Image (cartoon, helix red, strand yellow):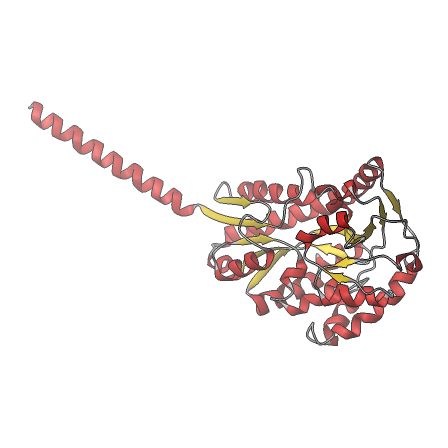
Length: 334
């Protein structure tokens, strides 16, 4: 009798264990783990950092806990071009990085990184949230196999240098300006009468210290995040480019997900982007105040002379972006 009872108990335990295991396996199967790569480090409190955190939180909420986004900060998974390529191949699932490094994979995007192509951040935000954003999303899917979920920006690029205030094009002359090794930047500076020095970002800090260069351009937030204010004392808000940092997901990975997961990811990215747009505007003003307290002089001159000259380089990039019709498409949405 005791033997039968023992056998019965063991059988119940085995059945319970199998049932619990099956439930765990079913739960695990529902989990969607997403590796998410971000670009080089931004300090805590930066809107780009907060957008990523908010996206993770919202995706978990909208999917009722099914989506687990694992964030890899500050280039842990490689350079920006590498992580875009890995996202294409499915090695990682999502990336947030500079549009300049996404453009080689989807050349139509060269059109949106040209100087003064948008009149304001507000205009770019409105256009990207509408038909223009969907147009470039479809182009990126077609050309790169990457779906753009959102088009956050890091505000405007500005001039910065170690030597003097720059309030006119004439003030730029005689200084050694660094630019990324990118034809758009090189042609832009040439339109201003400057022969720039192409240089990798990793070399900038030491080159400023030694006088190899006197300045360059970047978003003001990066002057804080990389502590460039320690050696540079002058900045000029020329608003010549908006620094887009799109959030993309591998199209093949996205298409394999059930509809509820697709909707949760899409809505989370859209809502995080909307929050980030307004947060960036507020952060821009705080950044200016911070840099001024650190001893920097920040000028905000009439940008008309910069704009008139730089916009003349657009035709040089029609072919690179896939034809003049790409530019006409942007202008038609305005």
